[in-house]
Amino acid sequence: MFQDIGPHRLYNEYTLKRPAKADDVLIVCQKGRVLLKKAGEVNGSPSQGKAPSGQGEDRLPRCGDFPEVLADAEKLQYLIEVDETAFYLWKGSAEEERPDVAENGNAKERLSDAGKESYGAIRFSVERFGFEPLSTLRRLKPQELAYGAVTACHLADWYDKNRYCGRCAQAMNPDEKERAMRCPVCGNIVYPRISPGIIVRVTDGDRILLTKYAGREFTNYALVAGFTEIGETLEETVRREVMEEVGLKVKNIRYYTNQPWGFSQSLLVGFYAELDGDAAITLQQDELSVGVWMTREEMPSRADDISMTARMMENFRLGLD
Image (cartoon, rainbow, N blue to C red; front, side):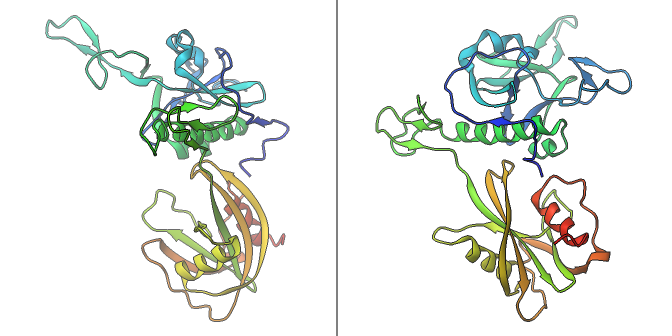
């Protein structure tokens, strides 16, 4: 699964400041998207043909790609580390570097969203970098850096949404001792958001219940899933979500495993369950577009997917549990 990066290791111990190195990863987020190097870049230059092994694979921006980053350490927020590679959040803005011919026809200007340069901005060439959907990180290699990047983006979004106190509206500061944002005026403390949710594999003998989401970019078959409501146990979430989404009752609910999933800022908990009674499916159409029973022989393979959902489906398809 995505978090299985051994022998590599993710270090999430909190520290307020750590000097950045040129080969540390730079996380720049904008409206739910993340800045990445474009395919074909090898050590900052376009590659010719196939990139050599170990080069040009991760496509993650490095601090050394932007001289202004290492020169303005106050705009960097240390996040996490994978092995010896640290991930830093750029707290300034990001401006696209676009040559634009002026009225005299021979001068070029650098344009930002505001039409002029601003303090604390990195500038990137659209030929080498671009903002991509967070889901792009599912396919990024090597996996240990992709997992680190998703976790870092989870934290980046939390920092962005908690710059001001929700109680008194004052500017928040990173805490000195723990990963938290603290209000210097009223003392309000905010910790990173981690939302618990469930994924449940429902079976009926040699058949499995597969679904497809409605109105989402992800179009593969999936399992019933949902977030846990306040005051609800995980097992109660399983029963409620299955009933709400497909109109079925389940029994023999059993824990499988869990998966940190930074894409949705959640901790997903997997369960197995069996059909209890009528097998007729009634779809919750604003959530799902498809709900079907399939045999092992009918199931598509998900062997190359890094999600817990895919692992649970593959275990059934191959008769492993």
